[in-house]
Image (cartoon, rainbow over all chains, first blue to last red; front, side, top):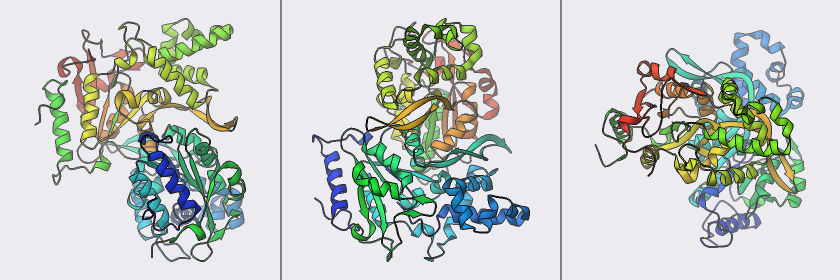
Length: 306
Length: 306
């Protein structure tokens, strides 16, 4: 086993499972060989590729735009669900869940063209910092995951992000930060309308949900966008459980990984629920479903880049 | 200009436009250079990559499955829209249009898993022949287009199919026939439901349209699946016009191509309307929108493989 690989992963069961799996599926002529076209790997984003604590980036991004809107139309601050977000009323925000968050996002971005949204998201990501950690959100990606993505790509895997986060916000940094192309990003989305504006064909965001990419919808969107069952999937919450099971229950070699946030020193420790994303069902059922647990504390030599 | 390229294309304005465009966007340091990540090209399928005359493959495929269903439940033959298809009543079929055809397809495939559908489609494609030409449908792909797809891929383009046809039917042959991966195929789709059947996670087709990928929906689906404006698009009907305009109206070098079926000897000649796909609007407005016409008669040295 090439121990020089995945140097930010500690030796242990998770690293061994990954290295063994990749060795098996890439072994030409071996019994578990998988042709490159079938080497599809899907990763959740929030809490799997980057930090989701204490408030998801999606939250901060919607808040930012919402503040602009409220400045122009103060009456918004009196209307739900905007009111909960303006007042940072966590009980009300939690009651609306991830879907409520995404619906606020859909409302605040309606009417923008896809290209204007992309510019705004890039500008925001270039400056927006995590309140507690004082670093750019894009610096809060997990070093071991960047290494794993690159390692899998080097071994002929095609990596896709499959996340409940907004598809266009993720695409604004996926290539630079993860080296994952825009068309390999699957996420929650709003409907759009094609129209000609000043002679230019534009896609305009509508205030209507197209897909909330969470739970059982994740495998459905994998079917729509990829058209192949993944052979490897990596998640961290109950929202990823259907994707992990879809991956794991196919024929031949399969690897399903669940990140356990158990490192209160270097990141955060939470494993029953985390505000908008419950975690307990996936964690409790991992052994039964053949899902391998990755412990941040035990398995990762590094978490964030220094 | 490397005249050994695109040998199944005759010298002339269309071939020159293609070779010039590719030379400009791939010229390192040149004023029109486009980085590989932005070299996105989208192709319609029916009538652009393969023959759509006299009946689209989608039609034959739905008919095949419909016959099986009617054999089990003869009352179906008395209910519209099935009745029109069972009776091959072209006036009624035409009135329902491409969307009606796709809705029949959605109904007849409801309840199948994605994987069972894929096996059935592959079995059917291995034997199904074009009634008039007596050849397998997959032999009725256009040789100059196979050559163009390969030529563009060699020059760093990523090729996507964007078609009104069923996404899963196209994926059953796109890799073998076009060398276009499954996840680069965008088409009409039904909604699916994730469920565990006998311990295996499956995507089950529902009798409900998810997206009818035609006209203004094509650029919207390009936004959803690719997340980038193409720099080259190739179509043949009014259903492709929005995609061609979306492509052509972006900044920098752009190429939009429209295939004119004007070769009654080697293929078919039709240019005002063709049963389910009107053609006149795109053809009449091509000069105004900067769309280059490809004449099958004038520009293609070959049409089908011998």
